[in-house]
Length: 571
Figure (tube, rainbow, N blue to C red):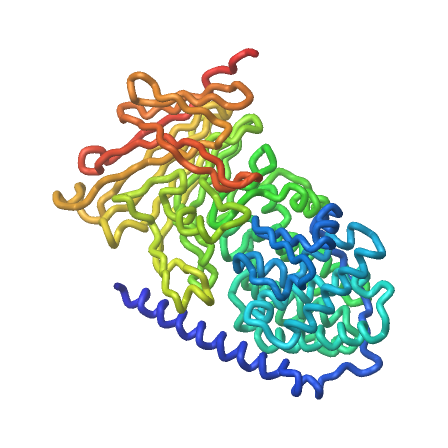
C-alpha cells in the first residue's frame, strides 16, 4: 500500500472524528435548556418564501393525507400514528421523510384540509424529533428541511395561529443555529453546498437572521468556487448533481432580488457555467449519460431548469476540468469519460468507469453504461460502480479503482475511492472526414503493469464508429511472461436494443426500436452476447444484454472493433 493511500485513509478517519465532534457540539447548542436563551423575540418573522422549482404531484397529497408515505420505493401506512413514530423501512426512506421535500405535493393540492394536514405534520415533527433524532439531525437532512420549510412557508403558515407561528420560528432558529455549527463538517460535495445554500436562504428569509447574510454569502461563494469547476461541471463528476444544484441556486438568486440585495457575482457565474453543461451531458433523446452516480434523468426537473437557459446553444465538445469528451456527427453522439476519480472526500458516488463511453443515434441510445437506479441504490451501489458495469475494458476481472469499504468510514463518507487512475491523458483531432479521440489511463499499472489506451473515431456522417483498445506494458515492449493478462472489452446495450451474434462469431447485429440495424464488428476477435442489467430505467432496473470481447494481452495486445449503421428495416 502506497504512502499516499495510507495518508488518505488517515485523513478520512480524522474527518470522520471531526464530524462527530461537530455534531456533538451542535447537539449541545440545540438542547432545549440551552435553547431557552435563543428564544425568538417578538420581531422575528419570515419575510419571504423562496420559489420551489421541483415538480409537484397533487395526487401524492391525498396519499400523504391518508397516512400512506411512499418514498424510495418503500411504502409505510401509518393508520392513526405519526410517520415520525414509525420504524423506517430503509435509511433512504427516513431521509426523504425527514427532509420534508414532500411538502411541495401538499401545496400543489391547494386544499384547506391538506394545508391543515401539512401544518399538523410539521407540528408533530417538532414535538417528536424537534429536540434530537439521530437521522433527522444529520446536517445534510437539517439543510434540506430548512429549505423545504422556507419554500413551503405559505403552505404551512396559511391560517396558522400565533402559537404555531412562534413554535415554527423557534424550531427553525434552532435548526439554523445547529447547521451553522456543523456546516463545515457536513459530508463534502453537494450536501455541504446545500448546507451553505440553506444558511443563505435563512439569512434572506428570516428577519432576525439577516445579520448573518454577509458571512453566509461569503461562505457560499467559497463553496461554489471550490465545487463548480471552470467548465461548469461538479467536483463529484456526477452529471445529475448539476440539476440538483441549479434547482436550489436559481430560486436563491430570486430571493436576493426579492430582498433588494444584489446576488454575489460568483453565484451568477456558477449558474452561467453550469447551464451549458446540461446540454453537454445529454443524448439526442434528452437523457443524461450514465457516469459517476447518474441515474434516471428526471425529465420534468431538467425541462424546468433548461427553461432558465437563455443561450440554448450547441453544447461544448470538450469538458477538460470535468473529465468528459463529446463527439457529434450527423445524427450520432458519443460521450466518453476521460477523467480520473473525484477527490477522495467526494468520491462516495464515483465510478470506476475511466474510458467508458456511451453512443446514441437518431434519438436511440445504443451503447450505455449500467448507471444507478432511482431507488434502492444501496443494494446496487457497489455493483454499479465497478468497471464491469461500464462500456470499457476490465483487466483480470478487476476494477480500475480501489474502493475503501470500512464500517467506521461508511457511516460518514459512504464507500470512497481510495485509489484509481492518476494519470489520464486525452487528445482530440480531425482526421480525414471524421473526429478522433485518443485517451489512456494508468488504473491497472500498480497491480498488473498495464496502461489502457483507447482510440475512437466517429465518421463525418455519424454512421460509423471505429475503436481500438491497446494494452501497453509499463516497461519494455511485452508483458512479463508470468503476468495476469485477461481482459474483457464490454459494450453494454440499452434495453431497447436487441443483439444477435453473427454465425462467424466475430460480431453481432443490433436491432434498434426505430428499426435501424447496426453491426458491431470485432474483426479478428470473437464476441459473446451475455446478460446485463440497465439500472437507470425510469421504472427501475431492467434486463438487457452486453457484447463482450474476451482475450489475453500477451497474444492480443490490440483489439479493433467497429460499430456501423447498416440499414433501416421497412415496416
